[in-house]
Length: 485
Ligand code: SAH
Ligand code: SF4
Ligand code: F3S
Picture: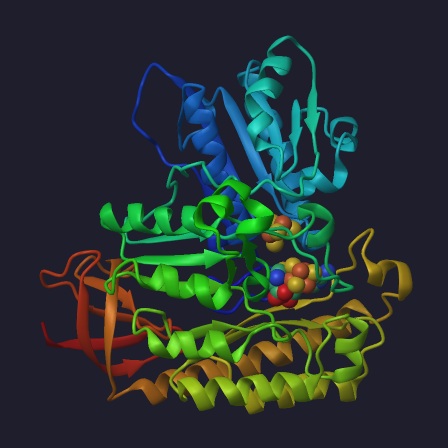
């Protein structure tokens, strides 16, 4: 899952975006054991690091932003493309130097790469003391005590149930206004290019009441926006019978909650709490979800709907289980129910196995049809163990993959620019998230459709809703003035 969209829009698959690495913040507590976590990959991983910090806090650790003073260093890793794994390997080499100065520092690898490589990691990277997969974080205290006795420790057990529902995440990189809430884990789709089902295990949905409680707590603490996270949020499904026999006996009704129901439950926490979600799967997004979005003003008018390719033969080989026509029908439906103002973004892969020039052009023409506000674009990177690796030859030369990638990036830039230009003269309500990166005299917020608007700071605070009129635009940003407050 990508998405979760920053104001630095386009990603070319070669460069790690700034947002793709997060480090823990200084908690300012002295005298305690210090934990440093660096997180790579998607928001799911960033969200998991907040759960890990919470588990470690119980063990007396506070987070630090400086690896030099860490007692424990964790890298929460990503396997999605070869480049992502290479970045982690390079980082481990670098950390080797830190460990020489501080030989007692424990180095742990968490997340998707830990799951994929398991104990092989310990053989390949001598500096690593601890390897822990995404479903085994509750075992961290035990694993750390094993390490303290001089052993290496591994737990990459994948669970069918674990959702960490009861763990209250330590908000690591929070601006105090927006937060992520994990609503499900794993993925049961078998997109042929994708490593996630192997690194994250089977799909499971989290208890909706724990999700609503987390949203309410965040709202009470001053947060004004939550993003519900899952690899395929539309297949969220929770039934009291399956998950909680006790509650079923008490209520006597068999309750089944789908994603539309969950959205509604979270939207009702407070009209001043914005609700976003990611990622939607084109095969599963229902009209019921679209109507629920329409019904609640505070459910944001924005959908991340990754297409991957605009060609039906390639989509079939990718095992995406929809074709071009199906995807176009879903986009038409979004526009019909939610209007042209609904923001739509995508992920795309160029140079998948056997992709011809004509088939690549189908991706360009689909982009022309949808005119995405934003896309995350990558060239295909073969991943060990995936269906595509087993069945197909990775036969498109790297230069061709990259040239095709540049073509879609260029087209996306043009569309982002045009869409932003169309916003000039229009009025929006934005939620202020912080000070503009370029000037402390300015603040920025987002529209419901996820566009970033910069305005003069005046006396606007983080968490304020402000009505603005847009006067100017670039590819990534709108500039506005306040119209009434
Ligand atoms: N669950 C989300 C995507 C998760 S991975 C969904 O189904 O849309 C985020 C993005 O990484 C994918 O959408 C895809 O565009 C890209 N990606 C995944 N595997 C890849 C690979 N092997 N090579 C290149 N890009 C890949
Ligand atoms: Fe990967 Fe497909 Fe699952 Fe997304 S839906 S995480 S691309 S297998
Ligand atoms: Fe996310 Fe990367 Fe794992 S994209 S689910 S951290 S492989």
